[in-house]
Image 1 (spheres, rainbow, N blue to C red):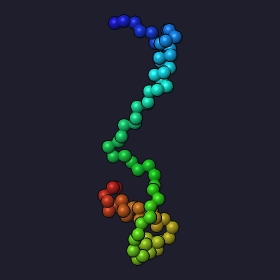
Image 2: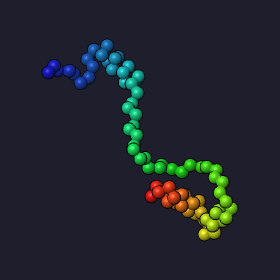
Image 3: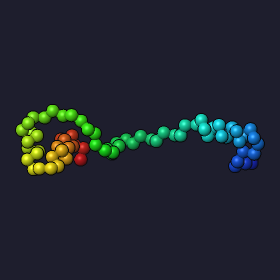
Image 4: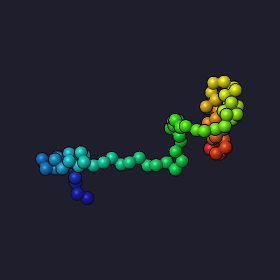
Length: 77
């Protein structure tokens, strides 16, 4: 096995190493099979007034309750 130095020893090798470092794209992160939601998304949703009233009757947190009901209906939990 031939010995290869850890660092470039000549000016040309240093220049090539710098060029390669500056022009090489980093590896893209691997996609997960089932990524965990990282945040909330603001959407506009039309629902019946009585459905909205049902969730709002218990006070603050009604949006989270709707989200929980939708997750359960979609069988995401």
